[in-house]
Structures are given as structure tokens and as C-alpha cells.
Image (cartoon, rainbow, N blue to C red; front, side):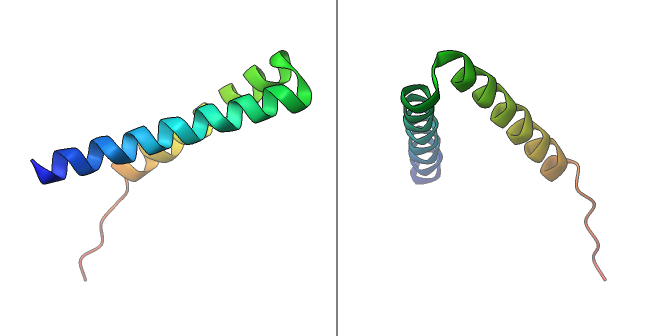
Length: 60
């Protein structure tokens, strides 16, 4: 149960960070640029997660 709560808190902190970063970018550069930048960040994040899941493990 403690592990699940830890994962949920980590997820919540990440979502708050992304939302805050989006709002700051929107305030500085406008909504269109913020949406494009957010999409770019989400694509990179998805690629990193995919690579981490499919990473080779070398047990020498």
C-alpha cells in the first residue's frame, strides 16, 4: 500500500510540474506555442518511457 501511495504522489507531483510549466509557457509565449511545446515534451517523455521499458539488461 505504501508503494502505491508513493507512485501516486510521484505521478501527482509530475502532473503539477507539467501543468505549472505549461501555464508559465502560455503566459510568456502564448497558447499556441505552449500547446506545441507541450506536445513536443510529451512525445519525448513517451519515447524515454518506451526506451526504458525495452532497454536491454546485461548481467555480466
